[in-house]
Length: 253
Image (cartoon, rainbow, N blue to C red):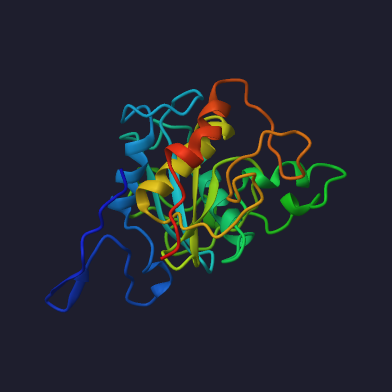
C-alpha cells in the first residue's frame, strides 16, 4: 500500500508535512521525513511486516539523499543501531548517493544495474573507484543517534559509489528525479527488492525509463545483459522478476 502523505498544515508560521523542510537547505524539501521513510521501510521488511524479500530477512538500514547528494534521512527497522549490520548504515547512504549520481530524469539506473558494467572489461570499469566515501563524514557522531532523526549523516554529502543491489532513484509525479533511496542489511539481491517496495510505498516511483526488459530500473539476472547482476543464491530472483507486476511503476501524471 502506498503511503498517504498528510497535506501541509500552516501552524504558527511552520509547515508540517510528510516531507523534510530545512530553514537553510531546501534540497530535502521534496523528500520523505524520517517518520515517513521509517514507516515505508518497516512496511516492506520481514522483521516488521509480513513482506518477504527472498534473502536472509534481516533488519535493515535506509538512507535518502537529495539531488545535490545531501543526506536527508537515515533510518533503520531495529530498535538499536546494532539490531542490523552496523556497517550497512554507511553502505545504504553510499547506495543512495550512487543511484542519484548516475540516474537522470530521462533514464534511471539502479545500483544493481551497474554491477556487470563495472567488472574488469566492462564498459564502466573503474566507476566504483570514483567519488569515494568521505570517511570524515561517514564515522562522525554518537552511535546512539544512528538511524534516528538526528543521524550525524544528515545534511552532509557522504559520496561513494556502490555497484550492487539496493539503490534506486526517486522520481516525482512529473517523472523528475529528486534524489535517491539506498537500503542495506541483507543480500544485495534482497536489498534491491526492499528498496523497490519501499519506493512504491513512498509513491516516488514515476520512473521514466531504464535498461531492463520492462523499461525501468529493475535488477537484471540475464548474465548476457550488459547491466546484469549476479544471483545471490536464495529466492530473491523470483520476487524481483515479479516486482513490475506486484509493485508497478507509477505513470507520469
